[in-house]
Image (cartoon, rainbow, N blue to C red; front, side, top):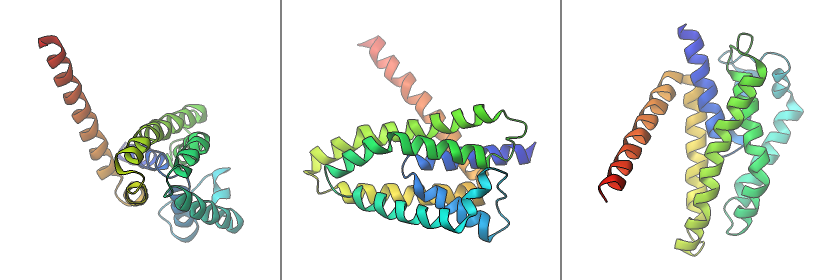
Length: 189
């Protein structure tokens, strides 16, 4: 039971981080599975450990990290990544959940799509606000913070999935609290 919970927490953390940066968590999973015993990828996901796949992920990561720091180009990148980030999240959820044998693969894939897609949607909605309020000067900093957050989330999801689960639970509780306060203000207004 604890292993299943840990595997699901890993899958949640990795797919969520893909919503910020599609290729960083994929590369981390590929390298971790190839060079350590921390992750075992079942077929067909073990293709991520292929040297050519890793090289392509490095190139794609460098491209995404570069274009995401340039005002206006980052918005175009977000449009392109509307497919890439949710797809990466789906792959990460399905490949890392570890219980995919028990969980229908389509359900795992959809869960990853929704998680990464949700994070990507928030990021895509927030970026034009950053561009407008900072005249584009703050884009590189926000993008760098997103990359660092994606890196930390992916590493924590692999090494300390319980921490990821606790963070997710806290964020959900915070959201519920915020929604209840918002509704209470609407009722009294």
